[in-house]
Image (cartoon, rainbow, N blue to C red; front, top):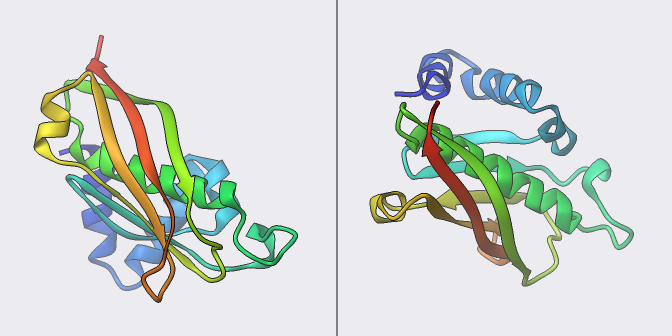
Length: 152
């Protein structure tokens, strides 16, 4: 089990644990703090964060900016990768293919998923990502490609 997943399990068992873990996660990768993410789930093959609709993530038409949504998707992928990647391997994102399907007019839930088969076919590992509004509308969907190689 990765140290990040172990920390997630330990901290989220405490009162306000997900909030505390979200703050720590955002400090480890400070760019994630710009979207004020809230970690919802971290486990093998699943990462999920919420992005609240705040002025700081809005574009000129008052919706969540597409790149803020992509930032949330990358954060969700990072949680998944930390929880899924074998201890003797390392991962690096090598690309992102996304489609903007609808306006992100409210808070978004950004989810990353994978399967054991995805990881077994490495070193190129595709992670499926999507950003969804509370009503179920998918606003952004795509794939983040990871490069998974042995640690040296």
